Length: 246
Image (tube, rainbow, N blue to C red; front, side):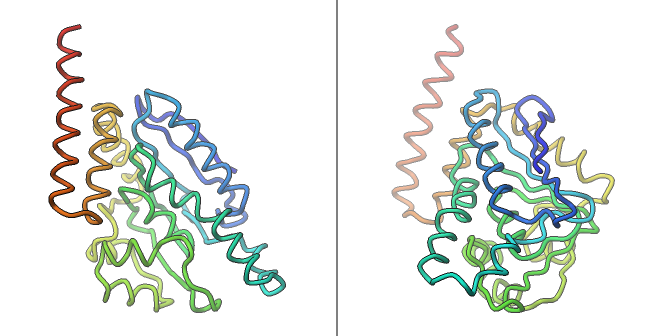
């Protein structure tokens, strides 16, 4: 279901490996990803997490089995399920001190878009494509894609993508600002590995604070941001001075 490996010093990779089910975010897949994040956060030598799928499908959406029976649930049961089973993964990817990276091959559908958007950096193969399709099944995104898209692309582009069922290419969405880079299929994983290895070489004590500084910047005032920056600089400077003395 979820293959795990260390790609390089400081870089851990999780591969969604249920292609027969479209790599959908089943309850079990979500739990496995959360468990992996828990495990990697406990390791002081890990700074970067990479999530990837299969060559033909990155992630095909949410838990189809659940949504087939969606109508039999009460509104309270549906809300509880989304809040307690689905959303914790997407919150965790944003708030973990580890840098999270989506390495996207193949198709991205529905909740697969939420998954890649929750990652800090997103890289895609030229053959990758994205389709939302929420309105086709009478639903709205429940795991953060409107929040992320409005910040990444602006309101107009976010609405255009979410209201359309059209399949968008990785190159087109990179022009919009969704992907950090698009590579030939055979070059994607080596390129992502190089980028992540270079970042991880700085160590978690530097990667984590910088991620936090950027992630909180849009939600706070300039004065609060500068105060936070000063505190982090003081702490990092102290750590650096201690390192030079030892």
